[in-house]
Length: 483
Image (cartoon, rainbow, N blue to C red):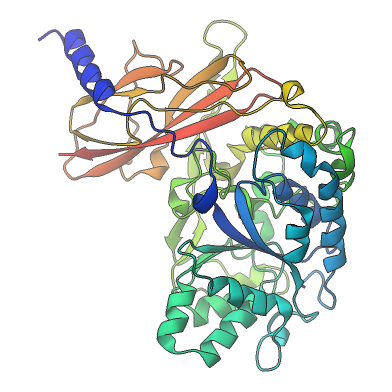
């Protein structure tokens, strides 16, 4: 049979048998992630910066708690009043936000979930007599009749969470403790107090994402450090002033200048934002918050500030730093509008900074929503698939990927980019796209590689509008390849 005819007939079967999938176009209702934040606000301006961003996504994340805590950088005080101050500014712009998207909570709802831990450092605040309104709030959230996991995003020290777990362990049957711990999903920005290694040892089944050891080797630090190959302009002081702080209303005024690094805590919730790429419960597939794999690291935890030198090394698997290799796409003035850079960049921090331009532009657009009418601002395009987001093929099969029907709510022109994310799947090779089916089109074909055992490959659709700032949405297609 003529190979081109075979390809066309195969694609017709794939495209006609599928249905439009818009399951992740917008997260509403019960599919939102539940979130409690622990923050050492006022230890560093970056907590205030991260809270400003988080409030702009409060319609797509269920914020169930914002708890003021200590950390190694602020050991003897907690400052919930700073949280209330930022929420007061949010109150002034919330009516403007709901002109752009539904679901933004009232300021009263947010004020009501602000709590505080004890003004004690690390394990000094864990044990008999150390309950706080913050630790009790965590237990109350865990006990809710809600099947969704509870994410705890830790921007400082986690000892308020440790106290909640200590109380459960000492007052509940083992089976009940196991059930409640199984509902937790913890993402901490390194280890910022002595309770962090303790929790991982005492609760070996606790889902825990962390870069142990030195801050500078952590995945999260890629949000705020210049890296070769990354778009560094979008973390510059000039970009922040123009897009976030100046002429962006009361909430923009709450965004302080950088002291050490911009928004070092933001990666702890970036993967909870529903954008079609993020899959928070599976850190190994990568997303805006970086990519992590489950293993026992050899890193000395004492490399983190405030962690004693005699702290035991990790005794069990945790979700921690994973290496991506990435060849960035660059804008081209002529011909294909984007072409791959000649340089391949590798490292754990690559897994986060590769998305930096996208999540910064998304933040900037939402800041515009605080002061602009709907017709003045930009809104993300909607990525759609003609087929399911999971496909099963045989070795050597030719299959199609099709995003026909994707659109932009503002009527902007959109560009398409399909690419394989090799590290996210089990197949460790690069799968070539058909040369006559460029990956800058909404539809193209791929030939499955020959495999001796069942493997998976992840393909990402990224659509980007031509509005200002340019916004991107995604779809992830997981292809299972059978021998």
